[in-house]
Picture 1: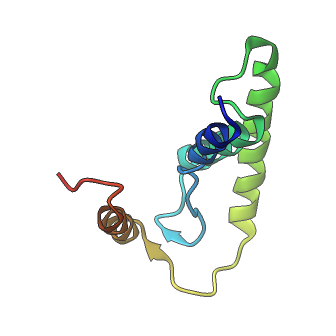
Picture 2 (picture 1 turned 90 degrees about the vertical axis):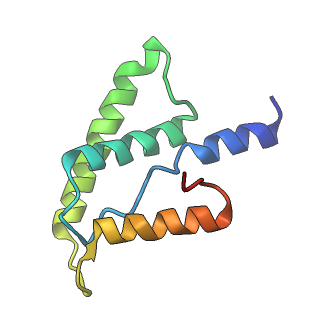
Length: 104
């Protein structure tokens, strides 16, 4: 695999990390864990670690999710919270406009 192909694969792994702060309703534990998992996958360079690394991988996901929960709890919003459904609709519209998504 070429370096460019590897970069494209690794870059694609973090698409699912979304802003979690200042939304109503607040981010769920599942969303925080999903973001932590995507982050660890990006750093590790793999979506599925070998068995020898599974414990370290899982521990990193747990620790990052824990730190993220603390961060979200401590952040102070200076603007009104965003509506999740409205922001998702805007993201879908942007994806359709860019040709990355089919509205069908």
